[in-house]
Length: 532
Image (tube, rainbow, N blue to C red; front, side):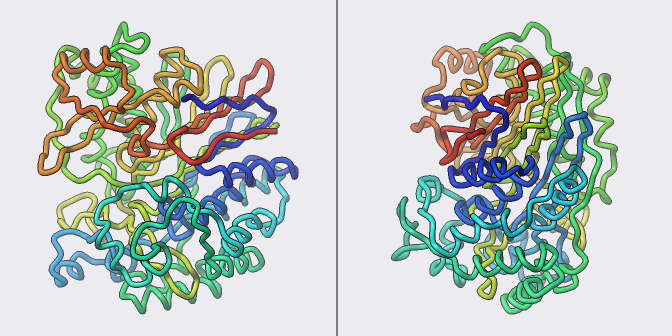
């Protein structure tokens, strides 16, 4: 059922209720949207470990009340020892998704928190770090209940994950997923967060915490060395944008796949007479996604390996050219070159002054590499799995380089003054979910809650098949299914409604006429939206 949207002076939205409550507490204490988001990011990193953690990456979009957009890239590069030869000599054809050899890249999220707080202070934020991390420390030390999502979530290479040294002791109960409601305590992680609260976030890279992380990574055989941590810093980057008829949409540049999200929405904008919840509108979104993913896979890589300016694909002429290649009467073939996986959290916040944040944080696959670093309690991500071991690939593994990244938070500014912070989890499928919820809200005229709740589709693959199938949630409109089938889509209806497989999405909008913030988070998640 649709979540009841929040209407308030300020609001936050998150996939876990404890994270939402943390954000509300910070706003009530006088914090701004950035400070609320850092606090939420810390809490959700503790209580939703299958989706994210401080051993992962993050991306930020921040819009000041006067209109300036800031984009922060907190994705980490490959370690100094992460070479193609290293993996080839070990007999790998691709980077494994689990274990020490999957712990390829530096975790950038904490540095991103620090960079965001620098921006916050420039905008008047002044809450102390120990307050922002206080809830996360308490949940890690005193315990939190395992979520429904964590108990039920299915991920790839699960057997290999359970065999990673230290993983079973940290997350399993009698060799199985911990049941929902099980109390879990992570005292080492609590100690680490407490140290960061007092020594500063840079300690994660260049202080006592960084030293312990580097020693543990060396012990398990990861290609990351201490210098990789010491030299890492999140970056301010120029956001990408696409102009639609009534709004401008923003997202992150490479290595983020934000280009794909903007391409989908930009192409569909150029197709005529697409109104409401019709097979034609969904067909247009699906076919635009196919074309956008083909461009993404050809173009998006580490910024130093780009052959094209990503913004050149978002010009009016480029979008019209791509849209003209969409056959509105027949579905195009779409092979899936690699498995779709990736588990993430998206969160949003808009404060009383109108400062808006769209933030995404992840360990990539569920539980990342599975490597629990014993000295710090940090679970390390496996983002480096997205690298290629082909020397000719633009996404080839190279020390210091970043792989193509699925994370892409979105933000829209409407001509009537509305500001929309929105996004979704779902690995490489994120652009599909983001484009569906935006299209339903901005074009089909749905309310915020209905746009997020409505059943979704995703392009996925059946086992042992390379050609994509269009999977739809079980409560998808039968008329839409028949219409999409007539257009040539191979539709497979799933057994479950409101499945996490179809993403955890959220939307917050600041209305200019009354200054109120409307917010909602996905019924597919364990969270919600709360306000002041």
